[in-house]
Image (cartoon, rainbow over all chains, first blue to last red):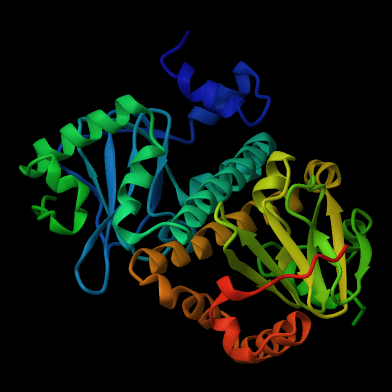
Length: 196
Length: 196
């Protein structure tokens, strides 16, 4: 199996794609390495790329009007990560996305993704079906929020992740942020160091 | 302008499509009329179709584990409506979608939508971009929920609609449900008549 076998497997969860076609797909992406603690996307900055996580872990955070911090997503191996709204609209980020482990990403720009979808019909279908799946997942979270108390929401978000990710993300976040594990149940208490 | 000019305009917000191609697209849809008070999609039933609203208005509601009702969406002219998760997964509905005005819909089945996307590349792109836009809109709502008190959420959802829809939906819901307007600010108090 090639180095990119997990990415190929990921795409094949949604569409049929030949090995040759997959090799062509890879040409539209570039490998990007992000060191632990570095910011991939910063709130207020333009968002040009979306990223598939080959290895490592990232956290996407949102600061509301009152400056309170909310954890939006942990992204780990085999996840896509970007500030989606900003990426689709080619607008400025609302989220800050930070590597909490050394990461290797497969990154594609907005224009290259459009070109890929034009050139390889299968990938147009892939991104359509992936978008539908993401909508459904997000709706599930929305429904849980509708029916949950504010104090339970962080735990609900965490419960969506596999146990090893839950454990790892708490450990890594604590390490990175220099706070106790307990504090992570109350994301509003997190003080984030600004790192470029 | 033809009868379907608003639908053509809607598609052209996302992709370039010729008049001839648009005529072909229409062949994959069928017109469906739903009388005021009738249920289009019922929780627990399979979801085969997605619908673009040509005229009229519908409401999509979700009953949580405790039986408390939540309004998920008002769909009016130029909106798409279905139970998205159930439609994409070809699963059973979680939502009940009811016409609160006489409606005319353009309906397409899951299989026909896949066929349309295969046959007309532009429509594959249309549905991909539409799905990305829907994700971004839903995320906006999720962020508002994250930062709002439970008691304010219904008002926040309503504030996303144009003023005439807000007014009309309140009036129509009250009429349909036989409750006072004030009650509509507290959706948990709504008693829904079961209508097929």
